[in-house]
Length: 167
Image (cartoon, rainbow, N blue to C red; front, side):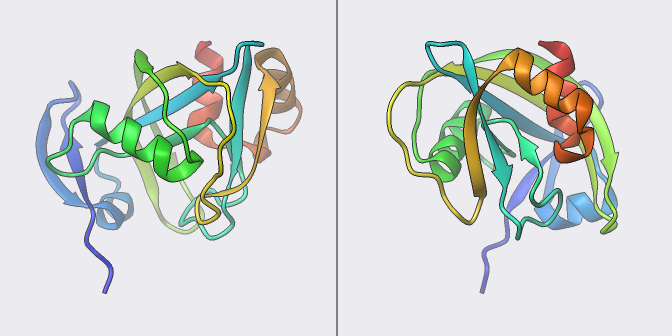
């Protein structure tokens, strides 16, 4: 039996107005809180990853270092550190840089309607990714990933393209 994961529903000002089961939130397209993490190395490269092929939406697409949702009764800061460790196998200092809203509809009927808090961090060292979350990863210069997105936008997640337009 899988544990129900409940995430925060928010209003347009990002105030929590309730919680609901994660899949139901995405089926009904309810506005909810999310986060995205971008980790850089000392060379200024960004760590991006290819989403696992089994993900419930955007499988196989390239995206930022890590993303997710806070769970019910979990702070945003606790969630970003938890998720970075769960997905990428490491943790680092993170600081929130900006917040934006986006809405995206997927072929499988799911919707992302998120207020996305974007965090930046820096990391050097070895790590082991979670294969249930990550199919592949690479360090890449920001200008190179922007060029790749311009040439092949279909290879990248909606939210990552939005983030890259802002940095």
